[in-house]
Length: 128
Length: 401
Image (cartoon, rainbow over all chains, first blue to last red; front, side):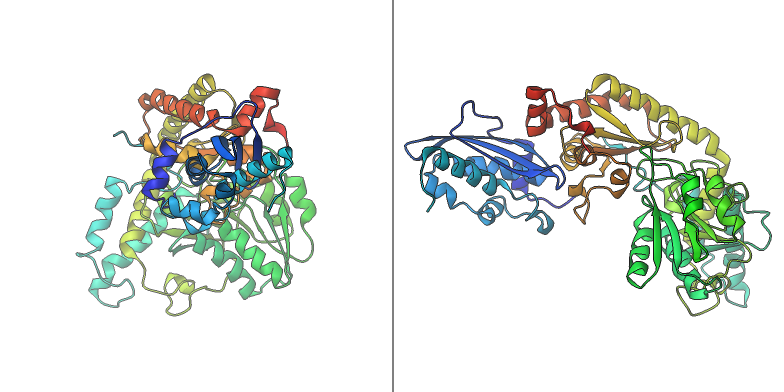
């Protein structure tokens, strides 16, 4: 078993915001079963702010912890702020991730960004 | 907290009697078996006794001119076979036959050899993990210098028909090796009935100490040593013998041979009851490996819609220790080559768990194990996009290749 930080174990044990928003403003899906991790993020946006974030995740301990903390980090942020959350920020917020998990399981920010881009596209907002 | 080991394939504890047998060789009989004086006598005798005990476990006791060579691991023994045979160069040729589900100590060597210009045939397996003898026969060419097929697979437990697989090689006088690491101590092995020229095993799979491997070599097979130096181990492995460990290996082999029937029956009963209990209480489980031709202590399941490392970690929190063939649990981040070779879908390979029993596994623990796995599977499924997709569309991903 890889050595996970306390923060990773805490989020893995009690993941926040699991679920799927009904009638979401944006949907972001990344990963596939071949690589071992899949995430589906749904967001609700109000007045340019992320009002609600939910996700479903298929994956290892790191992938679940990443999804959970990304949902926390994104909530209440403007879409510009949320687009600035990087995979590196996520890993740092989790107290670090084992080296071999940095690329494969650290997909949370990507899934969130996908959901935001989906929202922007639907709203006809140009990406900057 | 409860601690239930369902990962005896990773390690078995050293038996009490094995440890007792080893202890005098650390301090009392600490001499070097190669010494010409009295201090070497007892350790030297102990080595030979251990050889006989190991030979007894694999039916090699009466095989004239054969050798039992002690190594530090099964991996070393497997390396000795491939590298030693090529270095000896008795039979000329550049073709080796093996299977797609061998241990990495065989496969990685073959990969290297391929880069160096060797031809390698990795025979496929069917969905139960069996190699087909007819395919092996057809793969043999006049360039084939070695066939190496494992006796049983440590991950899915499938037992190969080694006697049938070795026959065509024997006909053409091509050395046949079997890696019996997962099988030794759990199912009867007989080098004569199996028709093998070389056989690998390791003591830590059957309650012997770690760091003990064995290579059986039939008369007439010539190998060059991997480790050159003194003439220990009949000149096939230099370096002062690890006498206490070898004594422990011998003792473990003796006990395993004596108690095999009872042990196998007990672990098979535990395994079968566990399987029934899991299948009864947890939906969407798949059994991997052969339904009958499998190691008695081996159970491999896939928990659909979830990933193995997450299962492993959650089970660990409840004191249950298992292993998985998912990408995330491997250092190389690739899902099990064994499960892939059986044609299992990526989803199911990711959700695979290896549950291996030991002689002390207790059937009274089964309700707790089933309860924990059921709970963990439910928790992880409730957050799995694959599960929710299934609930929506009724689409089962299990059979997607």
